[in-house]
Length: 179
Image (cartoon, rainbow, N blue to C red):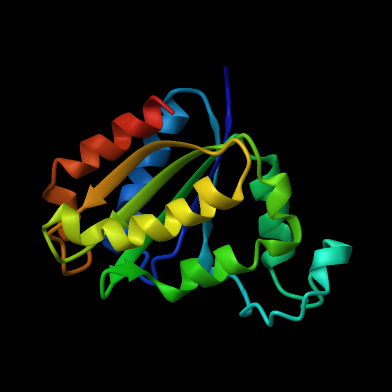
């Protein structure tokens, strides 16, 4: 069955390690016949949530930026890949801002498969748990029917592009192919 795969890349560097892992995931998913769209969050205008509460009743955000379009795509997708570089053992602010801004329609982001891609200079998986807990708090505790299908750990990669020689690239490709 062909699936709609949405890849959300929060890397600020297009040749950054988490973004390169996204591209490998995409390569595998395309080879498997899935429809794939990648949103490079750095190219989008996504304001911080103001906590005004208007969206709790209207299901629309009062802010006019790119988040409404992204939310539409999240609702329509079968598979969502969330990728972030790790900054001080947590997801970066760009990804957290995206998650915060799902409030108007988060109840519609249901019955999705999720993959998480994290890239860090640290090479210890245990130190990445805080970032994963942020993703899991969103998906497991807030979304109905969310299924975590895989985590890709791009560890030990500090400089942009260092991940290219890692076996993690093949892992990302295989997860994309099997999504």
